[in-house]
Image (cartoon, rainbow, N blue to C red):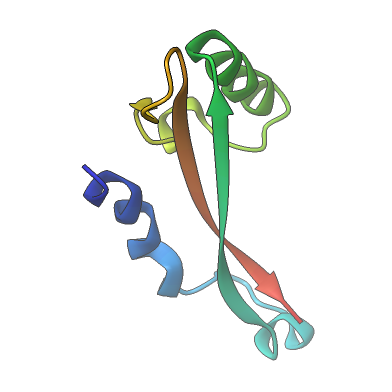
Length: 83
C-alpha cells in the first residue's frame, strides 16, 4: 500500500530543462505533503490546491484510512530546488 506513495519520487532526479547558472548550482530535494482528515476535507483541500495550480488532483496518492474512525490521508511528493 505504501508503494503508491513512493512512485512520485521516481522523478526526483529528472533533469530540469532550461536551467540558468544560478539554478544549475541548486540541488533538488523531495518535499512531502501529507493531508490527514475526513475524506470530505482531504478531497476539498486537494481540489483547492488544484485550483491554485499547485498540484494536479492525480498527483496525490489515493485516500488511505489512517486507523482512526472517519479519517484518511493522502500524500504528495514534489521535488523542489534548494539553493
